[in-house]
Image (cartoon, rainbow, N blue to C red; front, side):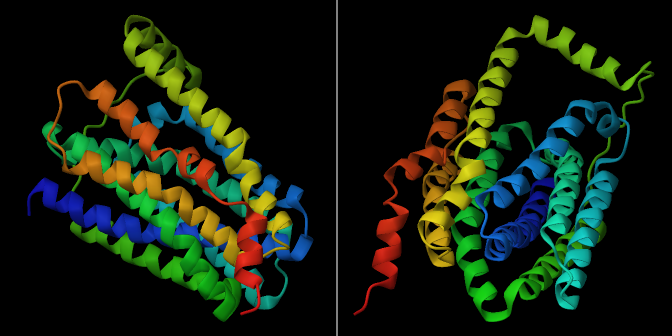
Length: 314
């Protein structure tokens, strides 16, 4: 099996795992808001997830370079799955509390800081350079497809079996992804052993590199600004705002979240099927714009309108 075909297998299995993780994240929002009826509690969940991710991401680069990417991905995913298993145990015994979910989100954020860069480097090693733009489109398509369907599936399963049923699905999807990565995927490894005096030494090396590569620096700063303001605004307050304005209606929140993936699916399909372009910066900029969840967010009807529509009498 060629490297590109192996990547397709990895992409499918990882997408299944991401679907389970996304459904768990959505279900935890529903559970937390249902228990506390507090928008602040839901916002703290996002805070606990993003802060460890940001802090660890600053220092993790040298660690990823000096270790096998496949091992890093397997260990990171296993720790996140163990945390999900503990949440399932607390839920089944009736002892689950919001504090447990805050800790769970912090663990997931920390493991994601290791898993994402390791996965990105693994993909770069597995696929030909002329396929990287197509791979980016495929990833965008699958990510936004998950954004569309995970709230719907999570709402259905949450109504049918509550939080434990969704956690079981998440653990099953993890098992599929873990076995595929462990037994069927070979990642060409290039371990870089560098003697750095401190974890911050690698950061300084990166800063010196960016000083000479201003184009990359400008792209990084632009994407950092976009991500910062998206985390600060709609990604942090959207869910509690929708729940509070729709009287805690799970279906309304699911529809609003699903709407945000439509633009991303369109952008992902366009990029994945087009031919490789030499001028990749405009293509990436266009993809980022089309894939932006803010675009469909601006076109969404009011949550209160959706709530009245879904709850009106026939």
